[in-house]
Length: 341
Image (cartoon, rainbow, N blue to C red; front, side, top):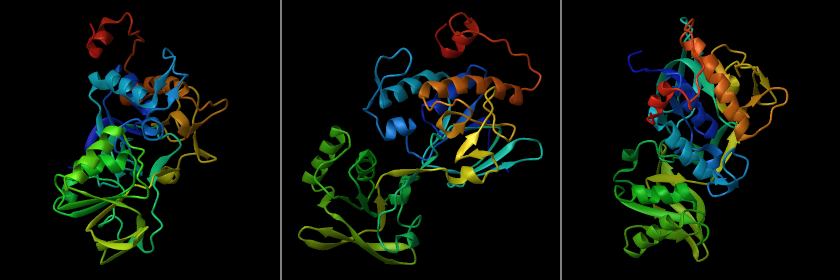
């Protein structure tokens, strides 16, 4: 297929373990594309506890989830990984030549020799607001992620929520939307203070509207909304809207991975402890998504699994090639790759 993205490895999941896998693969001259359902790297660390201290990362007496993510992104920068955010891999197919074809819900198609599943406890999926009939509008005028900003250009946009995603997209979409309304059930936010302050400035300037309330119902036809009813202390208000972005949080589900013919153990992917390969040769699973005797769900365990996986992946990608194990502390070749020689 002419529109296929061809690469050595597709990593499903851009959390800490998926990011470190880029480093280990990069040392072996293996190029990666990463696909993640979230709109930023870091997985659970960045999404659920960006400011929460982590105390068991070797060499860091304490580091936050966001701090760890930032360090990993800096560490893998020399290898130029390609990221595809706000996407879910929906299908995995083995081709006649042994390679894999992966398709995302954004209609991207990847062709790779190796697949690495580093999806933590599964895929984050958006929580659907309790609004009757909302499913008829989903992916037409109701969205749970922003994939193309142009889809919101010159639209009457309503964003519901009070976390980082809601505030970030309020600020990013305001310049291109015809109108923008932010709705939250209370006048307190879990987003970064700087984002909250900027949002309040835009409200004061009349550039966006802020409503204290909750979604009651939506109106429209043929998948296109035209009004959203907001339940407020003062009563119900009908607000014109052509695009609705509810950010009600995320839940973890195994997702399409469960349909790929991999051997599962209580919704976890079974692997060996030599290569961390699944029951399908060429498909590896590392981090919290995998299962083996003695498994510990720790980030440092995932880092170890990524290192061994990379060595095995190299043999799949370059069969018969002799690989000499080298240390970054003493190998000039590796230091040149890292840009520190």
